[in-house]
Structure formats: C-alpha cells, structure tokens
Image (cartoon, rainbow, N blue to C red):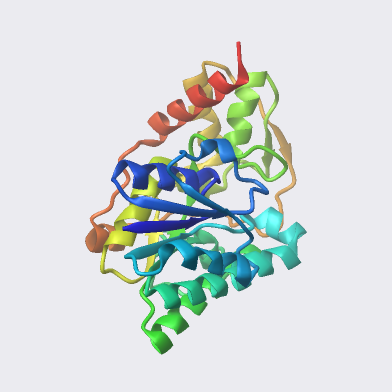
Length: 308
C-alpha cells in the first residue's frame, strides 16, 4: 500500500509515517512545513512541499501514486479552538477547502480517506460522547471539522468514496508542538522542566480525554487498512480534569507544580470523554498506553530535548 499523509511532518502525522514505514508501506508526505519539521521524516519518504488548500499542490501526488493501491491520511489542518478563532480565514481554507481538494485526489486514485477529525464536533455535551449524538460545535474549529466530515459523507453518497473520520480527543506525546497554541500537556511539562508556574484557564475542573499519540497512529493505520466507514471516536474513555493532569505531571517529573489561574477561554468545552466502543468493535482498536505511562514517556522526551 502507498500511504499519502497530509501534514506528515507534523506531530501526529510523523508518527503515522513512522508506523507505516515500519509495516513496509511506501509513504508520500504533503506538508507546507509551516509547522511541520523536515527532520522528522525518514529518507525513504517522498516529500511534496505543498499546501492542501491549493488544488495544484495536492494533484502533484498523481505523479507518484497513479496505478497503486493508495490510502490517504488527511491531517493537514489549522488545529485547535484558539488557533482557528484567531485565524478564521486560514482555518476555513485549510480545514474545509483542503479537505475538498483531498477528496478530489482520492476520487482520481480510487483511494480511501482517513480524516483527522475532532471531538470538537460534539461541542459542550455531557460525556461519554458517542458517535450517534448530534454534532453541536461551539467553536469555529469544531465547525470546520464537522464540515470536513460532511464533505466526505457527501462524496461517499455521490461517488462511492471510501472514508473514515477519526474524531480525535486530546492527543499528546512526543513531538508536540510548542508555541502560542501549544497543548495543556506540553505547557505543563515545559513548566516542570523549566521551573515555571503553569497557567490554568478556569477553575481546573474542566475535563478532557487524553490519548497517547502512538495509540492514535495505530488507529489511523487500522482505519486505512479496514473496510469500515463513517465516524469513530479515538480516545480512552477516561475523563481527567486539568487539576488531575497537573498532579500526574508533578508525579512523573518529581516537581510540585503550583499553577496560576486565569479566566476560561471562549469555545472550550467544560467536559469531554469518549465512548470508544464503536471503534473497538469495528476496527479492533483500543488504547494501550495509560495516561501516566504516556506522560512519563513525553516528559522524558521533552527533558532530553531541553539539554542538561
């Protein structure tokens, strides 16, 4: 199989690339390298530097993929509630138009698409969140991911496109990106390493479902190789508050973290946790790495990068 990974030099995408290569698949990566890191890519990867929101960039894949069995893992996106809120035009261009361009490529190659969707499509509903619940996004990010899913569903109805939308919950692990839109896990671990005081938005009782990036990569590979279709949650089913997360990171780092509290951010759901029974039944996937173990691996990775 040839696996085409949009955003393949990014956090999650690069883990999928590594797993696909380890399984013996050929890999093509499309990435504009705006946030991705070229150093993450093995020399065996065919890299196309391009922007998924530009159809001409996407169609360059045809040169290397025509006539092969192809699956598309679509991860290129403006990621996260805050970044989409601050860059709305770009969020729509990449997350919506970019998905339509990926669909057009998939139609030409008769390829299956596995979309990195998001738990943000559910909005602020009572967990556990199930795929048969109505989508009620409360942020532009969630709306763009829902629209991407709807484009895939329509293409499936009209053209027989094969697709899976993986609704990712809070993914963490090695290679998380720093910067103004960094995840809470990154920020807490960075604070532990550098002796900083971490910030908590709200009272710290908001909950999330934190899922390790290696488990997420396995979900993508399972979806690409399966005959399953539709939307599937990718999480652990465990609801963890921000304060509990802080305590776990204090434990794995051996440093007591004392946070500062700031007002909650608009668009953030109060609670979130996945029902993962559907993906377990359809794909045989289940999370294997516990939160504490995943945080330990991530802490050790980030500490090594920070130097002595």
